[in-house]
Length: 145
Image (cartoon, rainbow, N blue to C red; front, side, top):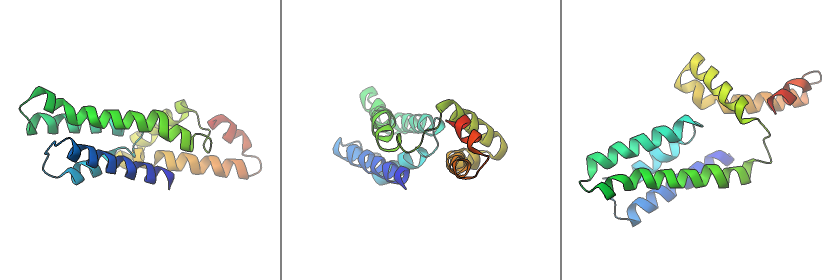
């Protein structure tokens, strides 16, 4: 729920900033939604978002400054979200090692493809909660931390 709210706010901010800056990409709401959706996949999603916005900037604009504006705007908002906002909001609730998350993302992506990347973190968090609650599985919870 919290991540959904954060990604929705990111999408709305991106939409508003694209419109406010006058970057006519055709449909700012669509591009804002794409920016919010790709942000669900940790590590991979933001990279895909920057590439998509860079391609859109190159196709839509002639000026080099305008070409760089959409990916720079997305990257700036995404960095603010991922480095400041999300750790402040969710950091105290989940105590999972970033290395474990990265390895789990690679494994789930290898096993199930894009769906695995999108479902990896919720599955890992669910497993951690179960491991904390089930007697005899506490060691797994400690390993994940």
